[in-house]
Amino acid sequence: MKNKVILVLSLLVLAVVLNAAESGKPIQLKLDGFKENVFDYENNQQWSYKGDLPAIIDFYADWCGPCKQVAPIMKDLAEEYEGKIVIYKVDTDVERQLAGMFGIRSIPSILFIPMEGQPQMSAGALPKSEFVRMINEVLKVD
Image 1 (cartoon, helix red, strand yellow):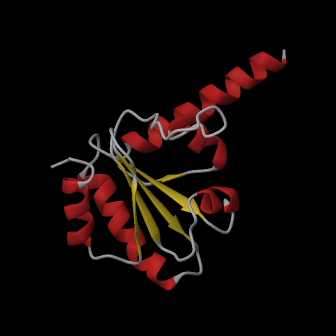
Image 2 (cartoon, helix red, strand yellow):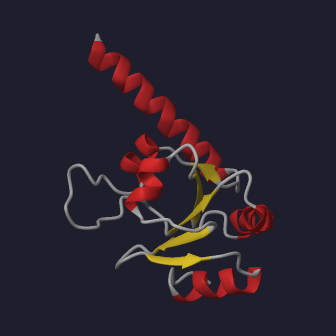
């Protein structure tokens, strides 16, 4: 019975994540979703991205002014690059463990995750043109 409940909950989480990814909106990411869709750090010592598309993770907080400047840019990028990249958002006030894993000291901090190779972190509010440059150069997406 417990396995059935876990399976149903996992399928529900997957459906929500896939629906958000297909709708061209940033996806709110929690610890369980991170382990399932990005990196299962409990079972892997070395970085191994689990996603099907390159990704961006926006580490933010609701009270952060620069984060509020980045939010509409992330929404625009999610729409413009729909089907090419996935954009996640992590609320650092809620997901302290995730923020700690990446050593987040200032927000916004943006993690660019290519399909191959190591992710790259950028700190601070960047203009949209810089995000596009990073998407092209780091994520190898046009």
